[in-house]
Length: 397
Image (cartoon, rainbow, N blue to C red; front, side, top):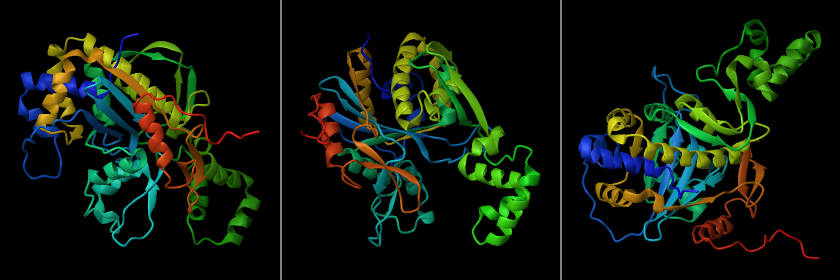
């Protein structure tokens, strides 16, 4: 099997092309580090780079925001060792529960997938310490706390940019590892559709908010059992209450051609019984990277690059400096020399399921909330390709 490199290689390939074709225009369009002026940073004799890759909904082609516009649907850290020619790819489950720095010193936690948004809209979260950790510095700190790695840079891409880039490349063939169905894939723009149940919804809407009369609710549900079931479905099983909000996805095992829209569904799906949860999705995203790399290297980039750059410029942001970009470009000459290492965290090894004080599902280290020391060791061992010791949770007889 050919050696592979993580999704950053796609961006690196684009960097090569833009220096030849588009010059600094593309770079200025996607570069953002909070500075008013764009300037070069002096190169450092650095061999390992930890890049945070974030995928979020953003806006559709009509300018309509996706549900959870700035929640990061996908989060990965690419630890790139240019001396040893290897990349360690660490997927972060979106339900990880992490402590956020506050100005008051109050104890405040949030899911990792919300922290990019917290940094972007500080006025909505006045106690979050965005003075010390402005914009993307906040999510960098949180990811650093979890992984034990110093996060050097970030790259973000929204859904529309992802789908357009795949389509510009002519689509790609993906080797689907498991046949699966997902009956709960959310349809964009349908999040508030009532699916021809406006009459029933009007009757029970006030009971979905606090402050209603419990006795009145009980009388109504006693008289109309169908409304009681509808109410229960809304809170417990929305796909039954509002089926028009969801799409049925089906993927067969084996090599499958995917355009941009299908590819996005493949890497986002997480409600399948056969290959669901965030952990199954993370594995698919890592597997999809190989297809991207193979496709980029197989197409004629000279004919594809200009429209690709024009589209990506609208949907990508990063804080990788000019000098760092040049260093990556030097490494992109032979992408095949890089070895990829996948590092997974799940509730079957180093994490455990829990619930916040508000009742929401979260993931915490199996050693306890905010106890990331074991995770740090596992990640370092994975990067250094050290075989892990037996699990400390195993019992002695």
